[in-house]
Length: 138
Image (cartoon, rainbow, N blue to C red; front, side, top):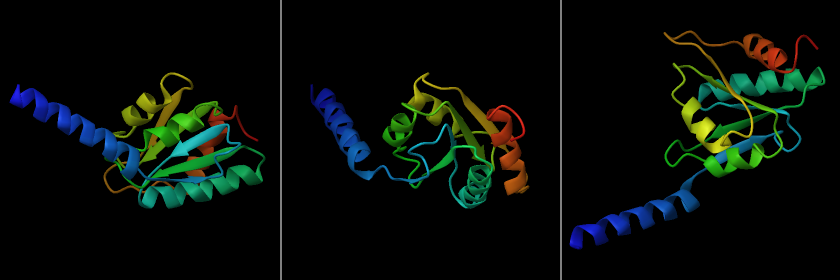
């Protein structure tokens, strides 16, 4: 009984942490049809690609998680109500993709674009991925 109570308390504490500590920055997400999710240095590259996409008439936006635990699922879920597709951009093998898929909850497809081994994606490469998701060259 004591262990059961301790577990219950920890789960309640985690729910409080999720509600109060999850953080994310939204950039041009309100009308975005394509929402990119990126964190850290990659998010600065993605922001440039989003600006280039917007200049071409593609409604792209960025969600930049500022906390990875707890993951800002509510921000991603909110964007999933209107976005047509999500793209995670990472300098890794896609460790964040599952977090985005869970938050999107099947409301939109989630794609991945990544680089590893210290290779940094360029804004042009990210823009090319955005253009593919938008249906080709714009």
